Length: 410
Ligand code: GDD
Image (cartoon, rainbow, N blue to C red):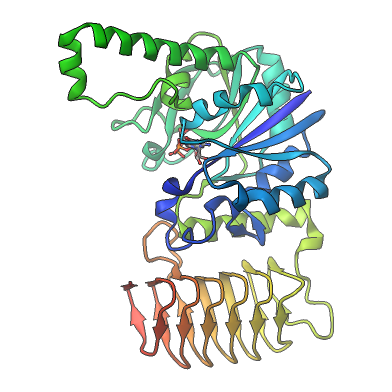
């Protein structure tokens, strides 16, 4: 049997995702019309002999309760949310719930970060992992040398694929091969985490005994013994010991830390739907259907006027109303938004319950990596008729009656 664990983190971790994380946990923010965490979960469905999927985080239980019960029914695989009482780090969280994770006595455990966007080639990783015969296999990818330092950089043996060296977000360049945050382990991983934790406890005890060390440690922050990071505390020390191996993907991969990146990843997942879930893409066939261009998702409850033109890369959530002549390009429109006649939305995210007046324009240049490259309207923002909002972030509950550009409206 195999189980999958998805690390969803918690509220303090989502700060770069503001203002979209004020009311919705980042893992439930919709990409291509489905919660972010839905994409790795549906990829897990392709794993042979999958017994359970666990989401581990420190959000309140009630935030995930509804999603977890509906997705369990839909996939016919038990999906459970396990809440940590405090953050234990990416490996510590796994260890904290080891008894539940081992309940079905799995031979392998997948571990996935929730904030990465890729095609999750899990069955291929499992096959490769069995061939290598180690304790763990990491999904890795080549990125540009300039961007590599935002990730864990690593060196692998070109023929055996063994992980030889690993450094988390190094200051000086090590390698353009990076850690994708998608792993498979044998249950031996628990012993490795326990080792780190025991070592920490012993060091803490030693420090208590030695006044010199106590003096030193008071100027240095020490981590609690149950806080274990997968990257620094496990991957780095175990590299070059024939225990960890790499599986390189040449398919798409992105990290989702900012609202701008969520728009890019929504496009990637919509494109993936062409082969995995074509029924989710709007086809513009019906007589009452708007003009559809490229990959578009429209929630069944949304009402889009037949003279509106939608796409490419547009995702429209529940109960949205789009008026006649409106034009939507590269955007995410969240629940209960109203877009009036002839309004334009381009390279933007429109927050829940917002309203755009007639001939209003919400737009940006679409540079996903710059802070104002995607315009964001927080929840319940009102943009009055003919107002133009360009490369800006508008916090919740604002009303705009004049045009703004390159601004953050608090
Ligand atoms: N449950 C729980 N508890 N989850 C956590 C905790 C915790 O205490 N800390 C982090 N996570 C989750 C996050 O929500 C995220 O999904 C994942 O663990 C990794 O988060 P971070 O530890 O903050 O690392 P990162 O995202 O900056 O970088 C990691 O992922 C990159 C790939 O996206 C590193 O492993 C990098 O090397 C890697 O390139």
